[in-house]
Amino acid sequence: MTAPPKRLRCAIYARKSTEEGLDMEFNSLDAQREACEAYVASQKAEGWAAIRERYEDGGYSGGTLDRPALTQLLKDIETGLIDVVVVYKIDRLSRALMDFSKLVEIFDRNNVTFVSVTQSFNTTTSMGRLTLNILLSFAQFEREIIGERIRDKIAASRKRGMWMGGCVPLGYDVKDKKLAVNEAEAEIVRMIFRRFMTVGSTSALARQLHAEGLLTKRGKPVSHGYVYKIVKNHIYLGEAVHKGTAYPGAHEPIVSRELWEGAQAVLKESPRLRAAGNRSRSDALLKGLIFTATGTAMTPAHTRKRHRLYHYYVSMDAIRRNPIPADAGPPRLSAPMIEGAVVAELRRLIATPETAAHILERFQQEGFHCDQRQLLAALRNFNRLWEVLFPAERARIVRLLVARVTAGPDGLAIDLRHQGLGDLARDLLAKNSEGVTA
Image (cartoon, rainbow, N blue to C red; front, side, top):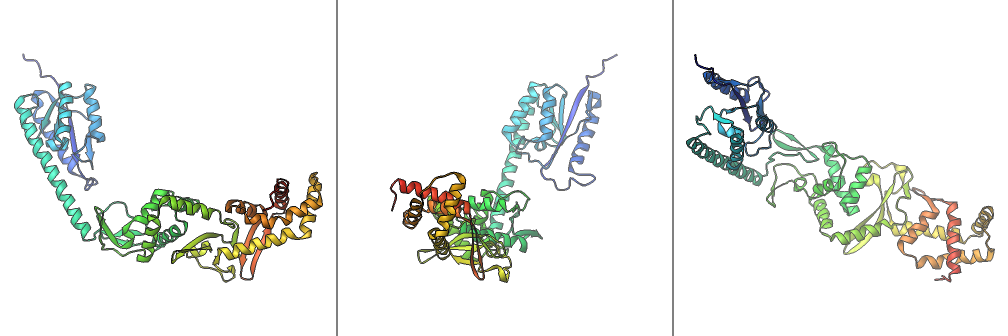
């Protein structure tokens, strides 16, 4: 009697490059496995038996080894659970010659035989290795040719302005494989362009949009990089870009040429100059303090005409293109005019005898001793001192004295911080004692 053949545990590996058709009842992976199982069954006399584990990678390219089922297969080989690897065709395992060499090395190290159902050879012989390398070289060549064809097709399609897939940009939806304008999102894109021209910084704008709760098309918080990509994306101008060259697109633009060029002009400024401009705007006297009569914040803004810079305070409703109530007041105010009016009111207030009496009364309550003549002299010195202060120091004093400025249809309303008057008086007294008289 002859001894039965040694049982050889056979692992069947299947792969499909795309996910198309994987949801069908019988797909390409099933067909590969069925053919391999039939081949293993034909070798039953040699002791071959297919193991139950399924090693199948659907939607993974053969140009890389980073595939979950293949990774698990290699782990099982290293632990000695597999004797034979069976595939329908060698390019199911790999299309790269160098990658396949690594796999053959792992097979040899663990005494594992590799078998292709449609290309009969045995990797344990020199002729089998030669046949394998020849077939694999042609597989790699085929992959590279396919890649070149795909790249050429993408380039030609891009030059014709066609949408070639990928992440759909904010402001568009895909309909019939074409970009179609999403009006609600398109208005957000225009708002971002307009506010970027006002703010002048993608980082600062991203922080504002994040605080306002704006999300990306995928529902994630807005970041600096996201804002930068939007204001640089030629898609919004109705163009398609391939390798740095813009071509007329087959989709509708979202922003006008004027708005696009305005944003690009801001981007072309030196980042250092833009940062300096942002710092100067951050010293706006009424930043965070001024509101419309209906409670909408007004933010510092500027425009440049004929190399001259004009500063404004603009209602956030105007920036966002929201409806502006009739009783809200002017949506746009000249910054020098409104700041001058507030400072004039502060100067008038500080010069009144009632203010000096109020400060003296507060000092007495706090146990702070001050001579009335010294206090009056310090308050009179405020006007001269103001002229020599840096913008940031002026802004600090305004925030010390002003709680809120309301710009309504009938003029300005200024809510003061009375506690700040005492703090300012102490500063003025200290400067007078130091001989600071401007």
